[in-house]
Length: 311
Image 1 (cartoon, rainbow, N blue to C red):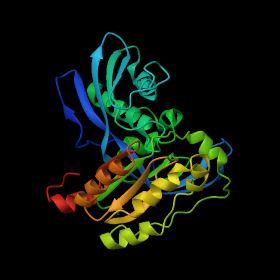
Image 2: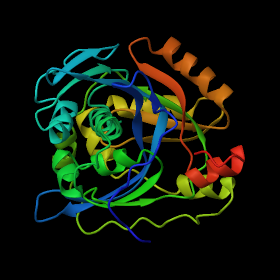
Image 3: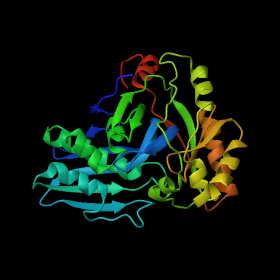
């Protein structure tokens, strides 16, 4: 497998508004498989992961302005900073070079949920500014300085990730998946989960065949794992309850935690069953966040289905 710095591409969710404004969805990031090893000399853990992106996400809108600013709205806006500590603001600062930009961010992804919301917001801001100003993205080193998830989020379609997140390669094997996302209404700090993880060595993710059958992909996925589950459950036992709840729902093929948690996902046989499962979870657990969605397939898979070459 050849790993390389990510390259940006046109996204179906990216579209032109007035000449000085652009808007896009910042998709939720889901780790279908996540193997974790020991720390490297820079303190970051060695990773091997298959990352996909949901059709669901935050909404980001940017426009030229007199100064750099961020306004946050949405169901999960509580606690989201609007100053320079926000990752989207840090991303914009990399490209603004003194120019003004107004960022409107509708937070729909729960915070500290293992769904990469902040990283996806930042990557989306960078893609939008690159298009708005017709300028290249910041260097790969600067992307990693923003955060280990940024290179994968810049791509925005299924990727294999290695190293500490800097090694990214397209994953051509991922079909569209009907999914259920569930969070028990708690936040789990990524740093705390990694600190509680005691693994060592270098993880090795056995890759599925690029052109295998959809059933073959599901069989491969069922044999994978998330190495951070045990550490996250130790910090937040409710994750066990979430996984148990998802697994007993009709049509569930697989349940696993995403990233460092506490959000867990279920893969379902079809979108109808996923939506029914989301309704049942919300009814049984009023304090939980539950959403039915789908993940973006690999571009080659999407082309094969649509027949028009669009990803």
